[in-house]
Amino acid sequence: MTALRLSAVTAGYRGRPVVRDVTVDVPAGSWLAIIGPNGAGKSTLLKSVAGLVSATGDVLVGGRSVAALGHRERARLIGYAPQTPSLPEGLTVTDYVLLGRTPHLGPLGREGHSDLEIVSGALRRLDLAGLSNRPLRTLSGGERQRAVLARVLAQQAGVLLLDEPTTGLDIGHAQSLLELVDQLRKADGTTVISTLHDLTLAAQYPDRVLLLDNGEVAAVGTPAEVLTADRLSRHYAASVTVLTAPDGSLVVSPSRR
Image (cartoon, rainbow, N blue to C red; front, top):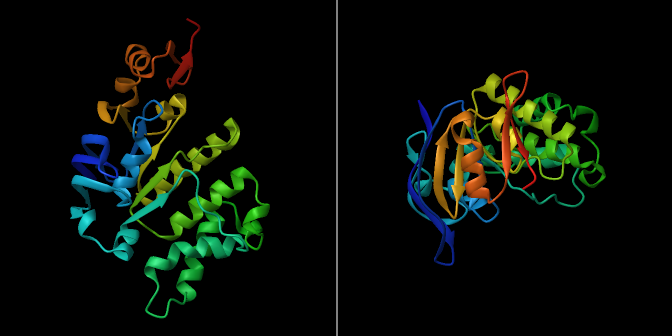
């Protein structure tokens, strides 16, 4: 079953295309990583799926056109975590995660007992229950990233968009966050589409990888199919070696010219 289908999607800003003619199907419950050199259009493509930038072509979620959906209905289907999320001043962790319930609230906009239960569950799953009353501004980088993920999870959307979720995190926190995303994906059947800068992480967590270069699809397939030394050297203008770790996973390593 296809959760997300992009067909000939072209998107950009002020009439200037940044990504062009992108076509890809994302099966339900899978994880697609979007990679590419700086300026390739990764974030723009993710925003086009979220309906945040002007786009032509078709973006279908569960067979429904994103362009035809209202904001609230779209937010029930798609959860989006930007690379640099806005973290409002004065909110506690619980207050912030409750924002994820906004698309589900009734006419009076007041959260009910079920909303609070969903938020409490998200906080527990992301090991944030002990920080629930802490102001957002007092959290560490890793804690903030988990709070952002908790807010998106509270939306209970079937498709989760994560724009560079490991930005600013050390290798331990980045690994922990992606392990958590993978566990939640498998437990809930959520479909994940993320941009990733670290190619080794892109090799180890997603099911499939889409390589963008200059706004166009250069390759799409399994990590082993896409992340070859020849292809990465060509599209990143870099000298790289792709190694196989003892557990069989791929490691992308720069090599001196």
